[in-house]
Length: 314
Image: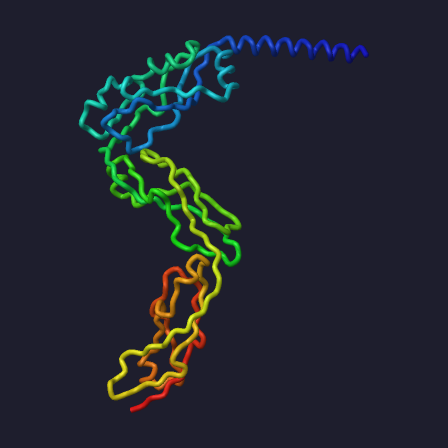
């Protein structure tokens, strides 16, 4: 028991000494680096930024240990506001140059006003900022739908996927606008689709680009399909006048899938089925059939039979 009391007294003394040493250490001044996020505002009205300046400033600051410990423990600093036109006295807007290299040390005063007066800023990293500007250009750019979907059985696309409008006016650096071929919608995925989808969706955001329209109407035309069959005569071209070719059969059954809304539209004349005279010259036993033309809105077209016999008459 006596030894335990001595140990307890010893530990209490050590704790008190440690606390006093820690408080004394925090009462001294130190130089450390703190990382602050930065937000740029008030860009030159007649220019558009073509590069990306740093998202953070590393500030070397002097202050007492208590203050620095409080900042270190907070882990989240209010963004520094870099007012481009104000900090540079409008020189960027007035100049005709496109590239600017600016030392950050000259902005210590303005940035010090945004942080605690308990912190004394002595240096900023990076030590220079590079702003690259470009001429502003605008032109209409196609919208590309960024979608995926799963159709229910017996359902197909009845037409191409599109957006309304199909293009938007985009403004930005001329060097970017000149090479921009399309802008995308935000990604969308649809399951078990059994009807036409019409949905207002957002366009993807692009750095340094301004889209006049933020949203478009996405249209995915979907329709239930059914099977239909028509009898179509077989044609053959390139046959010499002195030769007659008899085909057996001379017409074939064309089977295909078609949307219910257009079921009555398709006629035998909408298809062209042909055989090749070259196969006859090669003395093939059967002539292979080719679908030369068909309506663009039918699916899964097949022929029965897919090969036919022939007889030559001279």
